Amino acid sequence: MNEPATHRKVALITGANKGIGRAIAEQLAALGMTVLIGARDPRRGEEAATSVRATGGDARAVTLDVTDPATVEEAAKQVEERFGRLDVLVNNAGITGSGQVSPEEAHDQIPSTVDLDMVRRVFETNVFGVIAVTNALLPLLRKSPAPRIVNVSSAAGSLTIAANPDGPLAGLPTSAAYTPSKTALNALTVQYAQELRGDGILVNTADPGYVDTDINNHRGYLTPAQGAAVVVWLATLTDDGPTAGFFNADGPLPW
Ligand code: NAP
Image (cartoon, rainbow, N blue to C red):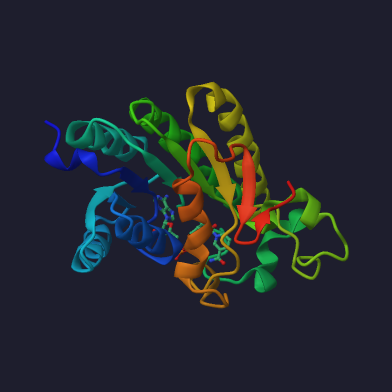
C-alpha cells in the first residue's frame, strides 16, 4: 500500500549512514524529497534517518548491503510497497579496500603486489554492487516522471588524469583496486546512460573531491556537505540536463 507522501520525490542513497552519502541524504531531504537511507547496519541507518528527521526532513532507513542480493531485493520490494516508484538513485556506497588509509598512503594496492582477493572485494562493492542495486531499482525508476541515477565515483578513476605524469594525482601510489573500480564505474555509467537515453533516465557519475570522511581517515579537506553538492546537482537535473557525463563541482571531468 503506497504511503500518502508520494507527492514528494523519493530518493534512495546507498551507504548513506555516514560520510558523503549522509550529506547527500540531508541535502535531498532539505529540498523536500523523501530520502531512503541505505545502510548495511540497520541500527546505523536508523540513527542517520532519525538525525535527518530532526532537521525537518522526511527520512527512513532501508537495510541495504550492496553485495548481498537478498537485502537488495528486499529493499526494492520495500520501496515498491511503500512508494510504488523511485525518482532518484544514488549509488554512493564504496570502499577503498585499504581500510581508512588515504590515497597517499595506500601502498597495498600497487598492481604488481596487490592481493587479488582485495581487488575482488573492492569490485564487488564499487562495481558489481552498483549493477545489482541499479537493476533491482530500475523498474521503479521507470515509474518516475523524471528519473535520475548518480554514481559516486572519483577523479582517481579518470584514465586521462591518471595517465598524465604531470597531473594532480601523479604523486600518489598506483592502484589496482580502488582506482580501476572507479574507472569501471564510469564506464558502466556511460553504458547505462546510453541504454536508458531514450527513456528519459539521466545517468551521470560524480567526483565529490577529497572529502573529510572515514574512508581516508579524515585526511580530506572538503566537508561532506561540499562533496555532496555535485551529486545533489546531478540528482536534481531538469529534463534537458546532461546524461553520460562525469562531473565535479567545477564542471565536466575527462574520462
Ligand atoms: P565513508 O564515510 O567510509 O562512507 C562509505 C559508506 O559506504 C558507508 O555508509 C559504508 O557503510 C557504505 N558501504 C560500504 N560498503 C557497503 C556495502 N557493501 N553495502 C552498503 N553500504 C556500504 O566514505 P565516503 O567518503 O563518504 O565515501 C562515499 C563514496 O564517495 C564512496 O563511493 C567513495 O569511493 C567516494 N569518494 C570519496 C572521496 C573522499 O575523499 N572521501 C573521494 C572520491 C570518491 P558502513 O558504515 O557500514 O561501513
